Amino acid sequence: MTDGTARPARPAIPTLAYALLSLLAREALTGYEMGQRLRDPIGLFWQARHSQIYPVLGRLEELDWATSQVIDGRGPRPTRRYTITDVGMAALRAWLAAPQARRTSRDDLLLRVYASWVADPAITVGLLREAETRHAEQLSTYLARRAKVRAGEALDPPGTPGFADYATLRRGIGYERGRLAWVRWLIGQLEGS
Amino acid sequence: MTDGTARPARPAIPTLAYALLSLLAREALTGYEMGQRLRDPIGLFWQARHSQIYPVLGRLEELDWATSQVIDGRGPRPTRRYTITDVGMAALRAWLAAPQARRTSRDDLLLRVYASWVADPAITVGLLREAETRHAEQLSTYLARRAKVRAGEALDPPGTPGFADYATLRRGIGYERGRLAWVRWLIGQLEGS
DNA sequence: ATCTCCATGTAACTCGTTACATGATTTT
DNA sequence: AAAATCATGTAACGAGTTACATGGAGAT
Image (cartoon, rainbow over all chains, first blue to last red; front, top):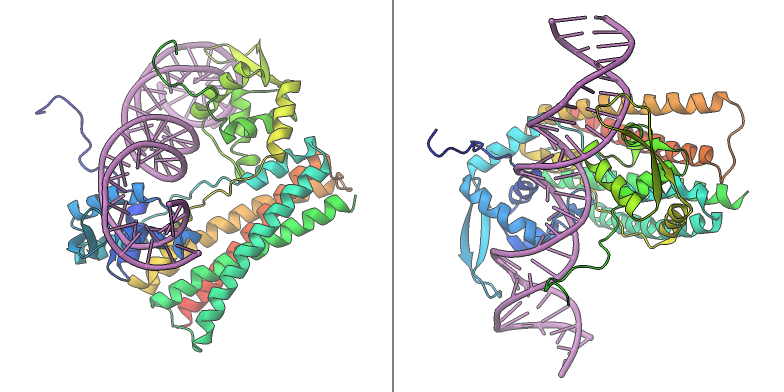
């Protein structure tokens, strides 16, 4: 030992690093643009604020998974556009093949429904109607996106970014439909009694 | 000012506090028992480790949302059984009526699918098959639970804990079925090309 | 003998959000 | 004139996981 402290040789790579790589695999982007895509379109399954993104971008450069060059920008600080490297592409492929630790999920609405029997049914119906509105809006957003894709006739084949977009979008639509059906079923149960 | 530091008058109540209250609204429990229920049955929509639970239990007592009494236990430290108070029940009801901030969700599998076009389709099929197995197992667990409920003939009516159990379980089943259908569709697409 | 379950607590760390900070350009 | 958008960074905090710590009872 040289300094008396235990240091992990390689701190774990956060999943956000792979989320950013998956964006950079498609096109070179600035941190700001990645932030936009982490709201939409991939906000469907991954989100991050800019305060979380920028430190990870530094990390990607350290690892040589991406390189950056300063471009013209309108911010008070230099604007950098990031490009994925071959090493970065290899890291992304390795992550795809790595075993998945199933994520835990926390669902506010389900928790409220679990506790809802303590309150007046009108309260529960109220929160379900709110959820119904949100899910209906989200569903129509996704459906509009799918309609735009389909307007261009033939679907991209598997192995293309376009197909991957469509596959994830399809799950988003299925999720919102399933949620809506359940919320409406529950409202019916509560109002029918 | 008395000490020169800015202190927030009331630190925010974490959602976990309400998750614990929703358990205590049904029955008096020890911290350990709450930990078990946060794996199953309510692990479906909320989870927590014991290291997160115990500090929140202290908080519940401070707020007078629950009281505890030392009971006979087999641990090296005194075992406490918590009981919800009227104030706690009121707090739970108030939370049910409070506006919901929609939770962000992060989905590892969707992210991998989004990035999957960079890798060999066999890799993607592999990770989808793994997911298929996990979801099929989870679905059969839920179905077994529902079968057990239904064996007791008539369903509990809305406004009862039994109905709330059933409602959340129903959503779990719907979720797993939707996921499975999507995963199988995707495998079909990848193998068919 | 070893493993699992019972049972509670703290410490260290990572992940994620909110707030602070700065400043030009475009839209309302 | 005010607000939104572009654009990047740090600080403080809350949420959540892993690891440390302790020790008896019952099962394999």
